Amino acid sequence: MLDRIDHVASDILLPASAIAIALLVGWAWSSIPARRAAGLGESAGGTIWHWWMRIVVPLAIAIVMIRGLR
Image (cartoon, rainbow, N blue to C red; front, side):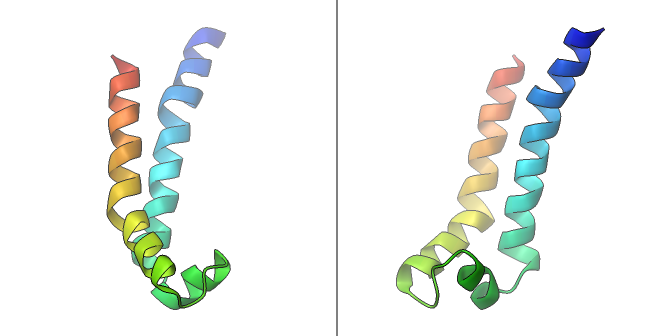
């Protein structure tokens, strides 16, 4: 019973919440306030970071999550 709960919490809920946070930061939160909150300001690195949060980070977490469930 506890093994099943641990599996759901660590292998499904944690990656799913990380994907949700990345998508919220990338798509729902406007670019400049999100970059300022991350301490990146209006730099070129902040622009790259914001696009990574939109596309690369959710995909990478999803790939790791799917591979971990096998």
